Amino acid sequence: MMRRTLATLVSAFALLALAVPASAQGNLATPANLNEKAPATYKAKFDTSKGVFVVEVTRDWAPNGADRFYNLVKNGFYDNVRFFRVISGFMVQFGINGDPKVSAPWREARIADDPVKQSNKRGYITYAMAGPNTRTSQVFINFGDNASLDGQGFSPFGRIISGMDVVDKLNAEYGEGAPRGRGPDQGRVQMEGNAYLQRDFGRLDFVKKATIER
Image (cartoon, rainbow, N blue to C red; front, side, top):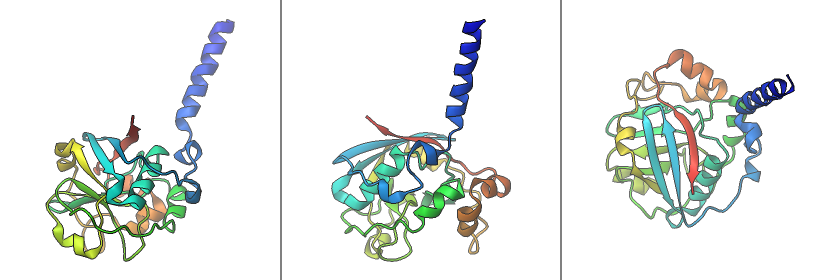
């Protein structure tokens, strides 16, 4: 009887551990605390609803961006995050946490720009931004060769080294976001999180889990 009770408690604890939100697993509520310097090169594995792709990051390309991405992936920020803006032939964008309480402090957690050392070629990953020194957590992967972005300050920090076929298959039916397109409104994604996306854009693909590869 004691063994059965102990086993039940262990199982219950395991379920509770799985239910702990990302904000408790890392320190996502306080962006300033997530400032670990990234290795010179590292790989980030993204297990998604369409399969797995791997990003190889080279810190020298964009040190500030590489460090931020390393800390976000390592602390679970991208887990259960939707690919909310998928424009065929152009790029796929993601990086708003599904929990508004987690995403809120990151909206103002800006990092300084990095000089553009690499071109926005197919398979290269870059931060989205709204002007100088506005990068936070949103990133995009180029579907095509988007060299026109280079002169606008979009600085790639890594590239897809496996699974680009998975990236190509991410659901693009919603296209551009509102108000220019029929896709999700970023303001509502920030305020309502995955509840909004699941209700109104239920066929979006998503990241199951992102991890730093050893």
